[in-house]
Image (cartoon, rainbow, N blue to C red; front, side, top):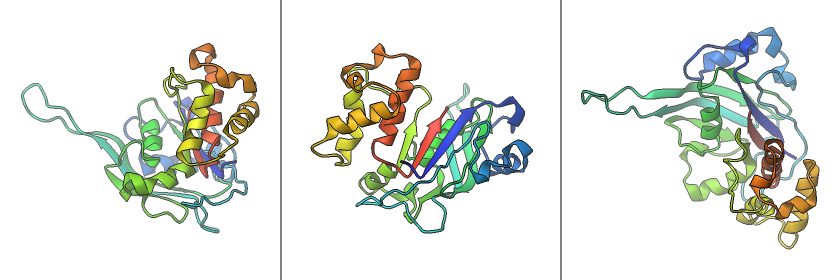
Length: 247
C-alpha cells in the first residue's frame, strides 16, 4: 500500500483561493482556514492531498524512505506554458499555470489542494511526477535527488514510487488493451511479480471491487466508475510511496 496519496479535487466553493496559477500563498491560506485545519493531521477535506502511511519496502532501484523527514518535498515549483504569437507579431506572455509552489508531505499526513477549475491543480500533479517538465523548482521524494533534474533513465526507478490516478479514466486507458494488460503493464516495466502477473492482476481487481474475470475485458465495456477503479488498481500495482489522485 502507498505511504501517501496526494488528492487533487476541483472547485470547492467554500475554499476558493482565487483565479490564476496555484501558488504557495494559496496553500498557506488553505492551511489557515478552519475547515482545512485537520489536513496536516490526516483528515480528508474538500480537495485534499491524502497521505495514509503504512510500512512499505524500499525499491531495489530507488527508495522513498528518509526516516523522520518528509516523504515529498516540493520547492518553488514553477510550470509556465509558452505564449503564442499575437495577431500583430508580438509574443503573448506565458501562461503561469503553477507559480512558485512549495510544500511538504510527511508520512501519514494529508494535504489539501483546492481551487477553481483551470487554476493549475492538475498541472501541479502532472509536473510533480514528471509527466510535464517543470519550468523551474525542485521535487524530492524521500532521499531522492532533485527529480526535476534527472534524465529519463535515472528517473525510471523513482517513477515506481509515484503514481497518478487520472481525472478522466477513459482517456487514461488504451482502448486496444484489455484491463488486465493495462494493469500488468507497470509490472512489466518495473520487472515486478515475475511468474505471477495474472494472479497479481486478479488480486488488484478484487481489491478495488471488480471481478478477476474483468481482466479480459476492454475499457469500453465498463462504466465510468468501474474504469476509475481500474485506474486505482493500476496505480496500486507497483506499490508506490505516493499516489496523486486527480479528482
